[in-house]
Amino acid sequence: MSVEGAEDRIQIIGKKQGAKGPFYVEPDMVALFRVNITSPKKLGTFTGELEIHTSFDRVLRVPVYYKTAVGSVKIIPERNVFSPTFPYGQQKLPLRARSYYPQILDIREVQSDPPDERFYFITERTPTIPHLKPQALTEVCMYV
Image (cartoon, rainbow, N blue to C red; front, side):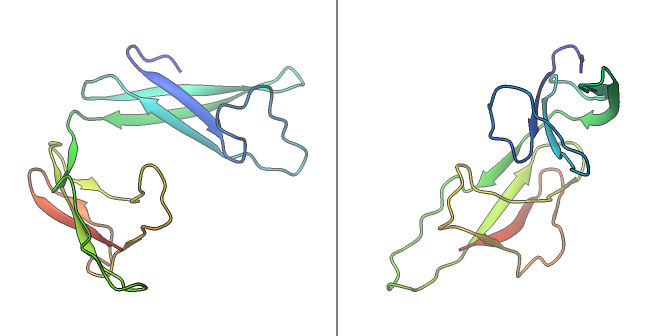
């Protein structure tokens, strides 16, 4: 894709990230792609296309459409500390966020970075997808 000021990175799901060389899709197989785009720091709607070149000299074009907005999301407080608990005990802390985007955002997923299986997220207080309203402090989920 070529959008001025944008960078893109394409990963084929199931292939180790950063692996070199071609990826072959056999007949009756499916390939899932994850496209990460670092967009220009400006508000806009962008279009482009991914080109997939086959070994039969065909080019498959996949249209891409995305919107960008200027803003950020902050976790408040930035650091939560679990107090000591009895072995095998559980403690829950709320994960709250404040949006500095001009429009409402939907949260689709919460992950720890780097991944840590000791922590997982539950949405017992928010059974639906939470909406982050501009400047509002929102409880996203509980982390255990």
